[in-house]
Image (cartoon, helix red, strand yellow):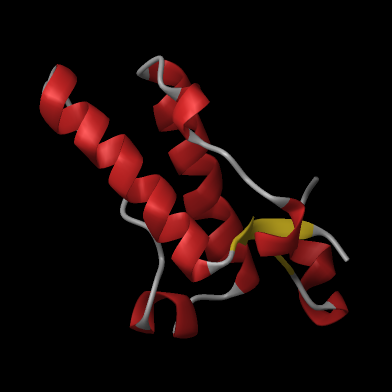
Length: 89
């Protein structure tokens, strides 16, 4: 299995921390990418989830707030082997 993204609840908590940081610190440029939760999670492929997660990581790095992203291994989402060929490490 290959890591795709955090589980929805974890991802949304991370999004809230990043958004709060953006709201309180600078509010310049784009807000962090929205987490894929609820129907966004259900309707998205593993590839789309991983792509959005990578966008979130890049945004956090560019805005000096990567420290706000904390993942516990148990909360991660891994893709099914059927979609493995679409996902890069």
